Amino acid sequence: MFWTKSFITTSKEAPEGAESVSHRLMLRTQMVRMLIAGVYSYLPLGWRVLKKIEEIIREEMVRAGAQEVLLPALQPLELWQKTGRDELLGETMLRFTDRRGRKLCLGPTHEEVVTQIAAHFVRSYRDLPFTLFQVQTKFRDEIRPRFGVVRSCEFIMKDAYSFDRDDAGLDKSYETMRAAYERIFRRMGLDFLTAKADSGIIGGDVSHEFMVPAESGEDVLYRCKICRAFSSRQDTADSGCPHCKQDMEKINALEVGHIFKLRDKYSDVLGVKYLDESGRQRVVQMGCYGIGVSRLIPAVIEQNHDADGIIWPRAVAPYEVMVVPVNVKESGVVNAAVLLHQRLKEAGFSVLVDDRDERAGVKFKDADLLGSPVRITIGNKWLQTKKFEVTDRRSRQSVEAQDAELVAAVVRLLEGARKDG
Ligand code: ATP
Ligand code: MG
Image (cartoon, rainbow, N blue to C red; front, side):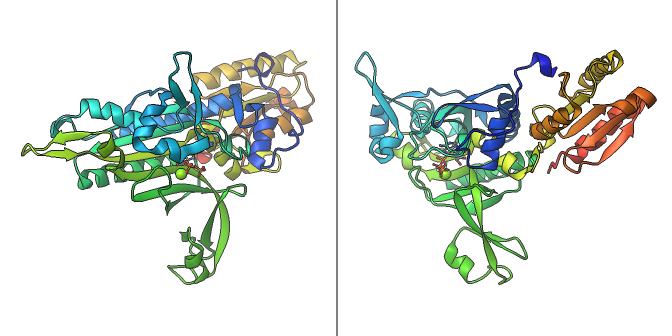
């Protein structure tokens, strides 16, 4: 992509009211734009990151044996009345009546819809187990939408639902999903913790949350200053680290995922039953598994930035390589940038060329702000020696490379920037 042909723009300042680092950086790079409080558009840079995150999640869900579906956002309230969650969700659920007089809501989550589908298809023990997942827009009329897409009223979630014959099956599905979640967050370069959690309005008895330590996080955890073990309970933390008895410090975190053993909470009410080997009727055991797909963008930025901008881990970078031809009035420099773009794309990298007629300082500042893991500068040195400068965004270390060594140098830096588990 060439900057002058793209929709990309940056701003020096974030609008007033952007309270967190990630929100400010997402606005300064025009990844998202607010329509009304709690509702955001994704612009090309933000959408590219979101797609990369979605792809990682999809790959790991499929690897874990889950099958993708797409369930409707538009749902009948009647179904929610059956499980009693119509009342439980209260004003969080956006409701309205259509022209036929049907009472509808915009789905804040999908346990009811997916369980009703399963009730129709499951008959015998041979139909089990299975896990379905989707990447879909959820609606929640949050009391306090905050920090941009961290807490919004319309957001993208990956939700998965497992259906098993018995507790042992559910335990296995749950552990498979938990392992998949760990792979997902590791691949994205996140430092995260898994905490036992309260099941809240989703229900069930066992649940775990995946927490990303971040200054602007609304959840609080306690972490041992020495061995890094953590606890989500203050009373535990007050008596010292459960492992090494050292002091624990209070840290803020963002919840990026939450998994639940629902057991028969939904399957019983909505009638997901099957006949076992001996012809006895039994209730299916369910689990549900959510990831805040859109919240993951700010989560990654909270953990990967410096004073000058974002430092994307390679796996989710909107562009892996940024090419900066310093003086676009030199036709040799422009030609070199076009050739480089071509070559790097052929080598499989995503590339943004800053072909604007701007001062070098402006371009370097924007490259830092946008945060591609690798920058290639075509500067004065190149004019004299045909040497490119290849710079690592995180360490700011540069190496010089001539044409023949260039791709290898980029690969070396990107491998370093991968932070892959
Ligand atoms: P929170 O405690 O942050 O309100 P939750 O426990 O209500 O979240 P879940 O029902 O567990 O959320 O949803 C699964 C995931 O969806 C959460 O772990 C979170 O990452 C994400 N999520 C939930 N609410 C929002 C929101 N309003 N905006 C963006 N992401 C959200
Ligand atoms: Mg939760």
